[in-house]
Amino acid sequence: MTQLNYEAKKNFLYPYSRYYGVITPDNLIFNANLQEFAQKVGYISSLETNGKLSPEEALRKIELLWQQLKASK
Image 1: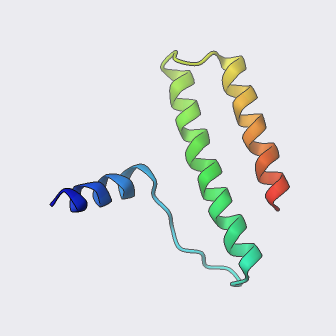
Image 2: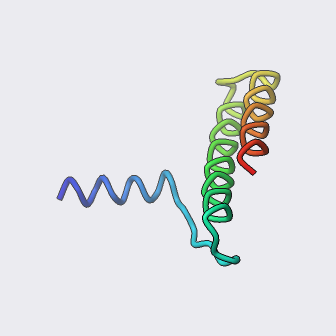
């Protein structure tokens, strides 16, 4: 039962959707990286909105994530 709870929590916190484009290894990797980028930006935005991060720090972290995403392309 704990495994079921772990999987439900994992799927809720880290949702991934299917890839509908042309299936190549590069496209699949970029799609996974893009979904991870979107998830992390959402977390950073929430932390900034709730006052846990300054706007400058949030922007710096998002810019770093963007550079990492561009490099994976």
